[in-house]
Length: 196
Ligand code: HEM
View 1 (cartoon, rainbow, N blue to C red):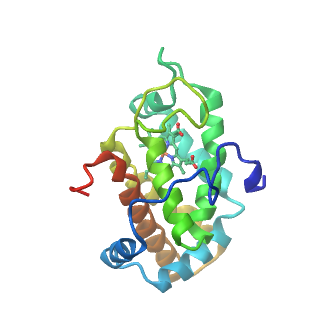
View 2: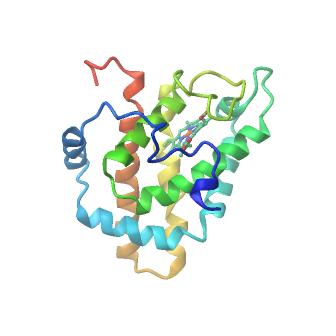
């Protein structure tokens, strides 16, 4: 599916507001997680490795969420029933996000869309994109905790295309750093701005 056909995927459009985090502050965040041009290079390689495995990765992540009621509730309606069309709609944007994480330049448009993703996990925009009735916010603690499974489960997929152990490790570290950067940006709406 081309990205233009993904419902609710508004990357790079006027519908996305400017991030409150400046490119200068983002640069300091990158320095803080030791994110360098080498990581960009290994993310591009990961993009090539993952491009035909995206659905398999999502099967693992959706299996993980689906088997944990305390996580599945965020995709459930107000009676507590999982909303399969909500799950499916988000899955398409999730697939695109894997490729964006690997292939996009981390520029102003990218920064802006990170803020948008943060808002979509927060009260401001959760449920609005897919016009669903579900719990109003993803709890902050799970946003942070999710970094671990979304990183750990990636390793076997990065190993699948015959790269050396060293290359796999570099791809994995780059993915981990990018996730920490992104989730740090996503938590902005959850905090008082003077504390961020
Ligand atoms: C939306 C990734 C944490 C539930 C999304 C999207 C992505 C994503 C890529 C779609 C963004 C878009 O609309 O373009 C992640 C990552 C996480 C994380 C990488 C942490 C490392 C969580 C947790 C939950 C969760 C812990 C709870 C189970 C959701 C829901 C949506 C969503 C319900 C749809 C929000 C809406 O109504 O628009 N997530 N997520 N996410 N995520 Fe997360």
